[in-house]
Length: 161
Image (cartoon, rainbow, N blue to C red; front, side, top):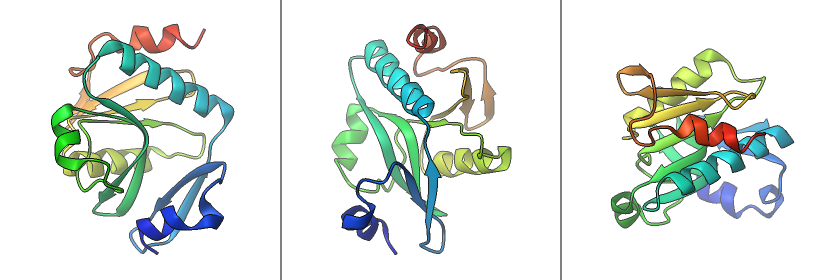
């Protein structure tokens, strides 16, 4: 199965969980809790308020070396949007890709996703745990904070309480 078939399938349109494709074109599903949705919305609000320019994308599909992965939240510059438009999936990763961790996620899975996003051009990847704590990564490893959105940890936690 390819990503366009997944997107166009009437039986897959309103599922209450995230869908990705593995490298063999098989659907991988992850259930999302309401907490996951609350964190996703808080991150979207924080990014939108922190920078007026660029576009915040929820459920951003990206074609990687291991098929289509879907970042929970992404931020794309105007230049990215001009070159990539509304393609689905994107052939490049937006500058920022964010994953909200679920209890089922493993450290190896998240490390692989980070590597896949960086290989497709992401400048930063953030991981958000269930308490709303963010971990920031650049292509060279862990960062003390975001270079794209300085101070964003304060903004995100503000919306959770």
